Image (cartoon, rainbow, N blue to C red; front, side):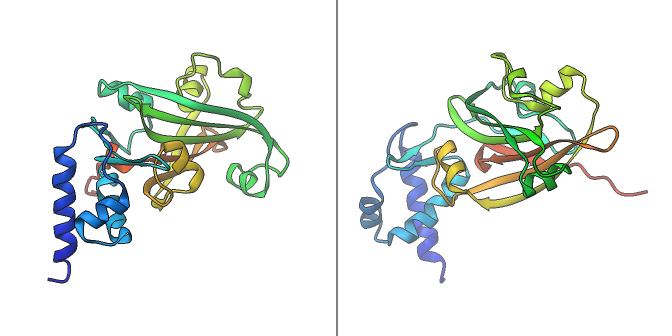
Length: 237
């Protein structure tokens, strides 16, 4: 019975959200907490569940908004493909925004990630990917400058470094990724228009050439409610 009040709060919130129109702003946290008879901390904890499901979106300084029903991007992790390719296969359209490309020398951390010497010239590409104008993912790729110069990505760049490398004919072999659920860092939260600390799926991956060298070191952040990843496994024989 200890969890009953919290479950009732979630039920009340679910009812409130279901009755609201897409894009509608919910009452402010103080007003909503007072109306539901809970603390703001308890309210935030309950609302986080709905945000992870993609039903609401909290924007710093603006409030909490109801999100209309949105198609889920579903993909098998055993296949190496870009977010754009996933969306195209499902008949969805994703767009790139907040594109930032910079040249920088490798510090000790990035040098280790790419297995290069500190000071090696690098190219870093950051961008937000959106579906129906809603930010759903934040992608960061870091490569050697000799592999990819920021000036090579023209106006037709749709956001996928993987697709660019494949079209160019680079000898891409495989990718290894570590997947975690994390609390959103402030810069990523701002880019995705969510609250700092909200739950994200983080993919930290390395893209390898056929000779085993690292081609790209990438970190991708996904809002969980908009993605469904799965893995097909077979019995070893």
